[in-house]
Amino acid sequence: MKAAVKARGNWARRRSGGAAAGPPLPGRSVARASTVLLLVLAVAVLVCAGTGLVVTQRNDARIAAEQHAALQSALAELRAASGDPYRLDAGELRQIERRAGLHDLRLDGELSSQRGREAQSVQDAGGRIVGWLSWAPDRVLFDAMYWLWGLLAAIGLALALAAYLAVGATQRLTLALARSLATIRRLSTQDTLTGLPNRRVMLERLDELVANRRARFVAFVLIDIDGFHDINDALGRAGGDIMLGHIAERLKSALPRGAVLGRFEDDEFAVAAVGEDGALDAALADKLAAALAAPIYMDQMWQISTCIGSAQAPQDGTTGEELHRHAALALRAAKRGGRGSLRRFVPEIHQEHSERRFFLRELEDAIAQNAFDVHYQPVVAADGGGVVGVEALLRWTHPTRGAIAPAMFIPLAEESGSMVRLGEIALRRALTDGARWPNLFVAVNLSPVQMRSRGLTNVIRALLAETGMAASRLVLEVTEGVLIDNPEETQTTLEALRALGVATALDDFGTGYSSLNYLQRFPFDRLKIDRSFVASLGNTGNTGAIIQATVTLGHALGMKVLAEGVETNEQRVLLRLAGCDEMQGFLFAKACPAEAIDKLLAKPQAARSTRRNAGAAS
Image 1: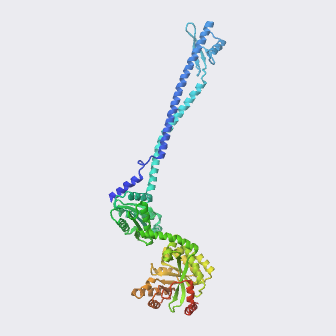
Image 2: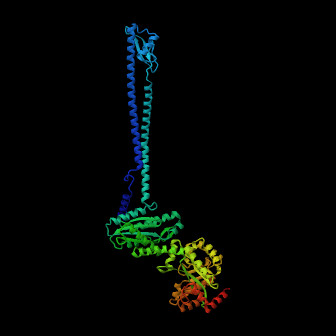
Image 3: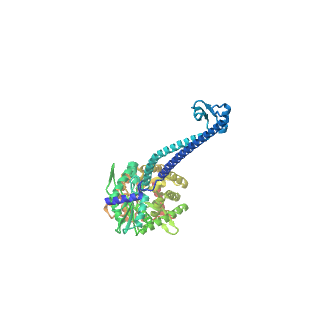
């Protein structure tokens, strides 16, 4: 087990990589480039400033030397002309100034201390200094250049400081980006709740296993947690997350060597494994289901059940995508089989899926075109056999496939969201036909989807007004499953229907939970005994006792009791002795079109029975 975990860990590290082993961070490259650019720019500016300063200083020295030479030449000319160069008047100074090209030439007894002036001594014939000639050098351009080079030096130093600071910022940015990238890689490859590989990584892993198959078989298993929304409702979102963690740990414990567990959806997990067993996927599915067999304790004991679908390469697919698709089809088939179902992919599942897709498209067209019929099975009074009502049964005849069983198209309508529209079609047709049978009640089945529809009461009110049928002659039948799913909402709906004057019946009593609390809590007018009890009547002693108890209970609670599926005269007699009020089944009549009911009611015996029943009811 440790080796398997280590192998999965090594594989996960190879897939996700670390911050150091991954590709260079784009932010880090930009930051480094910016820092280098700042450093290069700072060095360039400093070098330029230094070079410019040196050039300017040399130029200043050259100009000063030229001015001194020019002054010496002017003095020499003056000495040659007058012979006494140390006695200079203002006019001579201006003459020397012009000849030497100087500016603001002065003769002082002492060396001038004024800044920015050049000076040169004046000597007599004996070589003594008798004065100082000073002038203002013409260096305006070069003074400005000094400021420019100083400014450039300051800019260079500032850039160097910025580069230094950028190095630290770059290091911090690099660390932050590395952490962010590591988080992004983890989120893109792992489920945040369980730490398991996510859907994308699992599919990539499956592709690798199938493409580089070293073992003979590759299995892919999908596990869906049954009714996980109930756990979320009871424990809250946080509690549900903790429960998922426990479930993941249980599944990990059942993994064979080299298998990989991942989380696919909110309450769906996946396992990819390799092996030499020809039934690898089935064996793996059994181990995973067994791992969750023991309850998990969280505030209370939770019994976790799963639906599992599996497929195996190479027989079920030669690519990862094909294997995943077939496992998903197997899982869908398992869900249709009920809680705790396990299905491995077989070609028939693919055919069944194609058929379902075909009928889904055809069902939508049929609903749009109202291409349905309603047949009616008579309900007779147990005491005299007269017809007292009919049960409406929806029928669909496909143009090319012929008659489609309700067990086929009703679940499709519920899954596709078309059941409310289909139910409205059945109700409208049943109430329209029932309006012409004033002495009969008309029973119509309601699916759980219809019961959850908020507009059900308004629809029935509108249809009663549209067809003119009395509300008291409409019986709406619901199954026990509706009561279990949402009892509070169901009770509210049933009470609203009864407020319209509509009767209600509990269908298939005895096949589900059959809680007595339902009979006390919900307002039912009729109780229907399921055909499975009627079929075994007379064959086992317990069935008669159960039916007798059910009839007694129904009567005690003020309900009529109807037995369905009556096929023999012996069953009719025994049900009559047990006290049943009404019966229906092939013994009396099969479901038939409305026209056949018209003919049945036209018979004198049936007409007398219906009139007698109507009179008794009044």
